[in-house]
Length: 235
Image 1 (cartoon, rainbow, N blue to C red):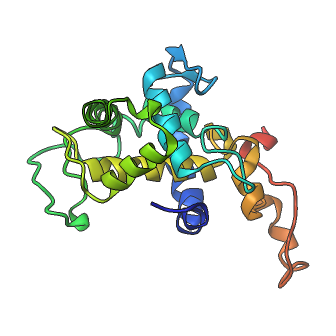
Image 2: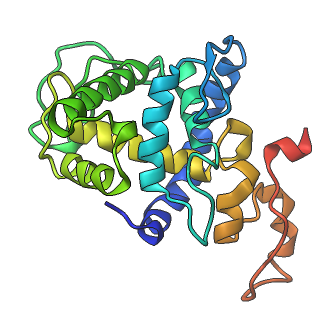
């Protein structure tokens, strides 16, 4: 499990690049989907997630990104809304994934890529259901109802390969949620996450590159501080 600073160091740059690139098609597609429900946990319209699925994600994401003196929690920054919109669009449908068989166990070799026949939406949905069922059977409560220490202990077990789910690779599920959480936390706010540009303010990222390109010469070797700009600020 990553602490907050480890999370920032490992995920920030990756999420700013890959997250925004992956989010664009999904954000466009999500605007064409009628919101299905609203979760009290997110206070956001949900396009494909159920309220209980959103509550599961709130609990896990806030374990990844707890509120502290650096920023609000991940869910408070809109990461659940980001994930919901991603899953509602092309990403969730697996538009850029090879989904023809045969599918073989990867034997722990990451270079073989995903060996799941499921598109991301189906994979995340099944993973939530199976880990919730495991938590009820083994811990007596759903994931979203666990205490903070119990949830952190469970996530450590999942990350360490100590939890076996019936149809889902638990470690792959954990990795997918962590990756989506990083992307949502650091992405442009137009895609639903990084509400209030909280993560950008935290790391001093000024946002849309075109807005500060001319300042590089004047600030070379010195800290550049500016109000971060989102794509939405130019619409």
